[in-house]
Every structure is written in structure tokens, then in C-alpha cells.
Image 1 (cartoon, rainbow, N blue to C red):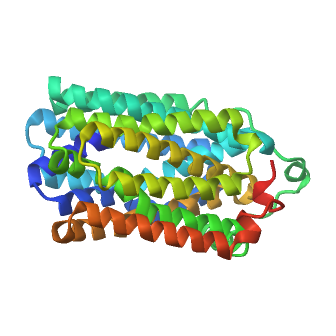
Image 2: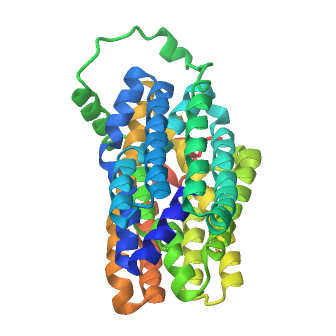
Length: 387
């Protein structure tokens, strides 16, 4: 709801696709410090850190709601609040995944991550449709009252998360070690990822997807809705809901049948399919057809992302789990240069060519990653492909 409401507000108030991409980029600002959130999660508990983070979201949403009701809200306020929110929220996904890893045994992680994704995807569908409807019917202030209420509710729900922890037998018998400094913990986590080939390959692929696929799939949708499909907030809501519906179907499929497939291979094939559908979407000029293609792209997204998250958790030592997921969030930083470059290219060469360049580059580099780390992510006997 929040992303749709504010993205449309910025585009309408500024009439600038560059400022739209700047706004979306601000929401990923905190990816640079996500590894430190992982360190704090490993030290203080993933649930505790997540509760504090979500309380911060509620505070910012309440502030923006107050500005709206007072009639003093401007794009500058939105940029500032989006920047503050962007310092924290990128780490939310990693903390959630780490909580799943805390509570689920390794053989069930693919299915568990699929279930976790269904909650996100179903919320995107409902949020996209109700958010646009609330703004149209009641205005931005009442819509943000709903957003703030949901954030407050999430704090209380998160307090119940992670009450039961699953621990590997090896971890249970390992004596606790003296705590190093947070910076040493961070350095150890980075070295662990760098020296573990399958984790390094997964991180590079995640960075590539955030650099090329996510800007086309998420960040630029308000521009496509307004300037290409010439529709309103409700039309944008249907586009976001269509993409999320496809992702939901993919998540349900992976949660039910994920153990049947080899995760590494499914991730690579899903990434290729995601780029292929986005390439088609870049050249679709009909609103309804575009929603159908977004549905298929969302389906491919889940097929690629659910196995990736499960593999990161399953092949990471428990003591490094929070830091690994924090580094996973760090690579979301690829969104920022991807969005800002798109904001420069679209006024010059147009949206279709810009999106096509992103998709073709994504396909080429995904192939290079698959070939370079084929022993670690593609071969049947690779650890990531264990069922």
C-alpha cells in the first residue's frame, strides 16, 4: 500500500520519472548497512531486532499521516521520510528469513520459504487493490491511517515470532565462544560468503536481479501505468496485484512441490523465465495484456527467489545465518544504480528500449554465472541441489 501510494504521489506532484526512480532508490538506501542488522540479529535475536525495526516503520508512517492531515505534505517530506524508512526496511526480508531458518529444519526450508512468500505476495495483492481504492475514495490521510495501523499490528504479531527454535545437533553441542566486536563479526560474515562458492554465486545472481529485473518489475510500474497505459491509481493497483498474484501462485507451488525439484537448477531456469517475460512486457501497449504478462513474470519471480532464499539458509552455518541474510540484503543495493540509470535512459531512448537492454543484459550475465559456478549451482550433485 505504502509504495503504491507514495510512488503515485511523487510521479503526479513532480511529473518526473527521474524523481520517481530517485524516490524508489531511497527505499533501498539501507542495503549498505543491512549486514550490520544481520550482526545485531545474530547477537540480540532476530525477533527482537525485527520488532524494533517495525516500530520504527510505524513511527514514520504516523508522521507522514500527520503531515497529510495537516495539509503540509510536500514531495520533500516524502523523500526525507522515504530515506529514513529506506535505512531500515531493506533488512526486514533478511530478518524474516533468518527467523524461518531458526524455527524450521533444513529439509523443510524450501516449503517454509514458499509459505513465507505467500504471506508477502497475498499482502501485495490486497494492499495494491485496497491502497489505490482508499486513496481514490477517502484521500491520502485516511489511507495512511490504515498503513500506520498495520505497522503497529505487525509489532505485536512479531513479538510471537521465533518462540520455538530449531537447532542442528552440531550447533547444540558446540560450546559458546567469546563475543568478538560487531565489526569483526561483520568481517567474518563477509569472508564466510566470499570463501563459500555457492553462497558467492547466489549473492552475485541476487545482485544482478536487483540491478536489472526488479527496476522493470517494480520501480517503474507507476511510470508505465501513467505514461504508457494512460491509467490511474486503480490501474496501477491492478498491475501490482497482477504481478503479486503470479508470485503468490508460484510461492504456493514451491511450498507444495519444492522438495521435488533441485533448487539450484530451478533458480537459474526461473531467472531466465523472469527476464523473458519482462522483455515481452517492455513491448506490450495494452493494459490488460500487460497485467497478464506481469502475472507470468511474478510466477517466474517466485520460482527463482524461493529456492534462492532456501539455499542461502540451508547451506549457511547457524552462527552466520543472520549475517548471510544481511549480506543478501546488501546486494539489493543493485536497485539503486539500476533505477537511477533507468531514470536517465527513459527520457532519452524510451521505456521499451531501456527495459529491453536491462533484460538482455540480465539474461547474458545469468548465463555467465551459471557457467562459471556450474559445479556449485547447476550440477546434480552440488550441495544446493540436494533435496
